Amino acid sequence: MTIARNPGLGTNARPGLNTYTWNARKRSAGAETAGKNVRLNSPLNERPGYLLWRARHIADSIFTYECREFGVTSSQYVVLAVVKETPGTDQVSVSRIAGLDRFTTALVLTNLIKRKLIMRERSASDRRRYSLRLSAQGFEMLKRILPGAARARARLLSPFARPEQRAFIRMLQQLVTTLNDDARAPVDEDALPHKRRRSDRTTKKK
Image (tube, rainbow, N blue to C red; front, side, top):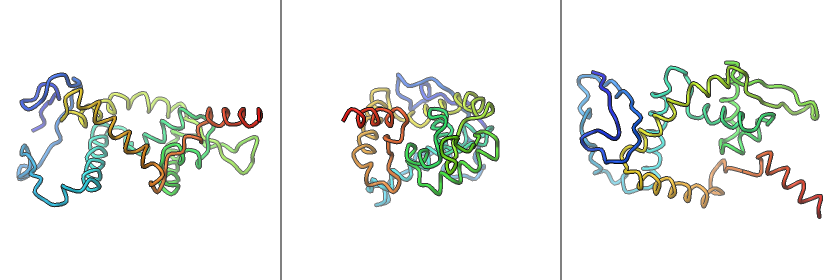
């Protein structure tokens, strides 16, 4: 049975959490883990890499469920957001800004272009380069998906009280910024247009 849940009102919930609501995922009648706490007895649960991998899997699953009516994955959502913020950017820059490897970026963009959410046009200044912009449908998709994305975020952070949520985000930010260069696809903020313009001005002054 599908039941309504609220991260601030559950029996084990802590006060001060966001009040977005969602419908719990339907589980089969024979699912033994439904409604039970998972025990972390495996040695894997002492490994930060494994726990982060599980957390990423859970985050993707929650996002997919909350935004299921739109058929948009978390990677596609990130790419849509990057293209919205950097109209006229190209595929390589999207990869660098989002921290996605180029193969994944190409697959995601191909899907979004086929769905007419992103427009791909040959650059007027460089005929070898293709610029990317959100279509009207792409803007509308981002607008419509925001409530689901907000529910997914609230659901993902719901195990924590509000101060813990802020601390958790800060620790994740510290991890991803400090170890950015160790990633297979590091984030490169120099690919942002305003960063490039600032760099150009600095070069000209010299």
